[in-house]
Image (cartoon, rainbow, N blue to C red; front, side):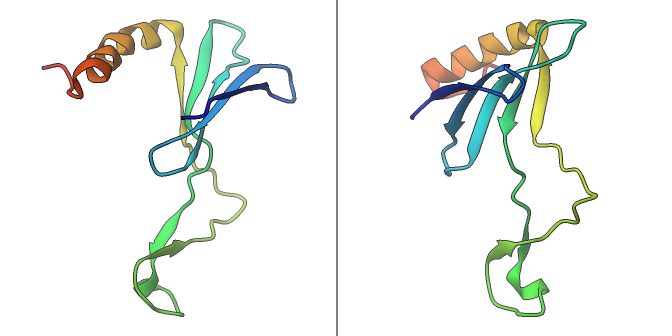
Length: 101
């Protein structure tokens, strides 16, 4: 996996990578002033609809245009404490391929 470190246009650390299916993802330092936090997840929701539900028809999933006034949240806003709580779970998965019981 290629991991690229950069900065946002406001100067915050930003790490970019692609997930298993090639979706652009990132870990970005949050601008939250009250505590340390990061944004973590997929950059774009990339909404899809079944082709059979469109005027054009067809099969499979096709892109679905969302109005500009609609917000789709794709990234988690995690505090430093939340990341600490998730790390043991991720570590077990990294070592075993399983989630802890």
